[in-house]
Amino acid sequence: MSFDAIKKVETFIISIPRDVPYLGPLREGEKINEKGYLIRKGNRSIYPSSDMSMLIKITSESGKIGWGETYGIVAPHAVKAIIDDVLGPVMVGRNPAEPVVLHEDLYDLMRVRGFFGGYYVDSLAGVDIAVWDLYGKQMGLPVSALLGGRRHASLPAYVSGLPKATLKERCDLAVEWVRKGYKAIKFAAAVSDEGIVAEMAALREAVGPGIDLMVDLHWKFTSAEAIRLIRRLEAHNLYFAEAPCEPEDLEGQTIVARGIGCPLALGEELRTVFEYRPRFEKRTMTIIQPEMGHTGITEFLHIGRLAHAFHVDTIPHASIGIGIFMAASLQATSALKRVPYHEYQHSIFDKNLKFVTGKMGCEKGHYILPEGPGLGVEPHPSVFDYVIG
Ligand code: MG
Image 1 (tube, rainbow, N blue to C red):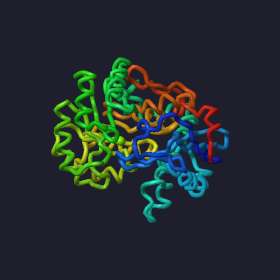
Image 2 (cartoon, rainbow, N blue to C red):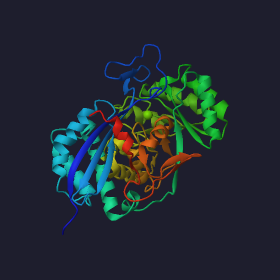
Image 3 (tube, protein in one colour):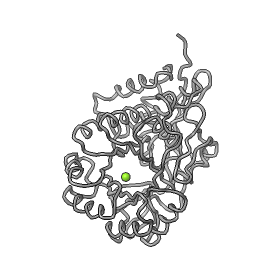
Image 4 (cartoon, rainbow, N blue to C red):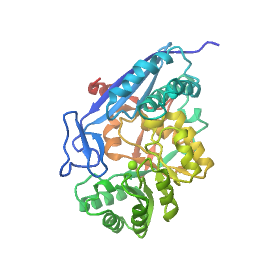
């Protein structure tokens, strides 16, 4: 059987300047270093001061093009090298209509060396999205149709983060989002300078009882500390608590999940079904937050279907990028059953929408899902003005 094989795989590192860094203005003791990164004292994590992205372009023999994006926000050259040096040459000549088979084959290339996470799987995620996009274009179908069908015509969005310097300003911003029609808001404990409980109480007071409020605890607490804190937040009707304990502390998270009266959400840092599986088995969380830029479409679906089998809801994570992996996330999420919300990183998503073509957006509390074959969106030519490697 003849097929329209993969002919070429290309990679582009993108850096788009932004006025206010992710998670809000710089705080005392925080500075941007000579490579453009800053370390947030609140969660001890490194972030780029610009919007970084890594785009992947796959061209078929007939000239059809598939686009992917991965989570290359820090040291993006590592991801680029893996794709340019290892994955791309192996993909040439392969059939894009077999994305799952291709993903399994690429995963196997490095697994006996222990590369079943981190940058290697981020690289797989980016190329996997591009292969599904190309396959969809070949078939003339949106990715959601290839994944079994679109169950949701739109997806409820929760507003993620209130990037303002003071609690008063953050409360005002929350009220603004509610007025625009949003029903759920998550705040970042890493920048709750007035105290996490005080922030929760002030936000509840500001938005009233009908809004779902969530908190991201950024892996900062022991299980006992987390239980005590979350219990106090529950008094203000917390919708979920995210990532209370260190990411390696599977037992600690499990203890928290059993010791609190609201759902525990986690998973943004996990990439494959193998990383999720022990957490499902132990009932470590009641909501999973897979990040498309880390998982790719094949693993995302695999993880989402397993969550369904464990009666666990999926509320996908969505972070820094130009919108290609957001389109992939919306396509894949729309094919899952149990999805109360999808994260909405307004300060990144809205600003970067001009860098994608196609119908996608977020309005009045809901995502507008991309239509058309493949992902339904493509990078706008203007984004290539920001290529740095
Ligand atoms: Mg988080």
